[in-house]
Image (cartoon, rainbow, N blue to C red; front, top):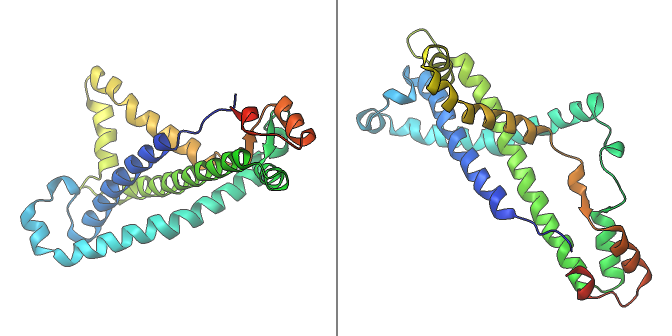
Length: 219
């Protein structure tokens, strides 16, 4: 039986990354342009700085749509060149390249196999969106850390002070955001294997040999 893809889970995580990255980016913007961090922002300040809100939204979309993709591409190229050889990272026995599956599906007119390929492409797209978001929030967190001043502590600096001076149970609670940060690092570097689709070897042989391969093979 072939595994099913859970795109909804990835998508929900992407929404979480988007909201989180916007909060930290807004904190950077307010400290730099309004000389106050996001925790001190109130309705009066927002009403008096409507123009800044539009600039903030534009800059955030620019960073997440363009800068994060460029940074993700550069990080991946460096990581591949320096540390990782994808030819050895995955057992090819029960996996096939997505393009090979697509070609077999078209050649044998197998709609079920082709739909399986399409579902995998949707998953790959969702994961790449997650990678771009992860790269964007990673850059934002770094900038947020360095934008902090003596009078206006950024959210990352406040969090670090919280870890340093908080009670022990606060530090245990902080394991969650620390874990999320480590997962973000993982997401930024997790590539390569996306182009392989799980397909047991016996099904590969069946598809290649049997011109009449049909839906029962993939159930």
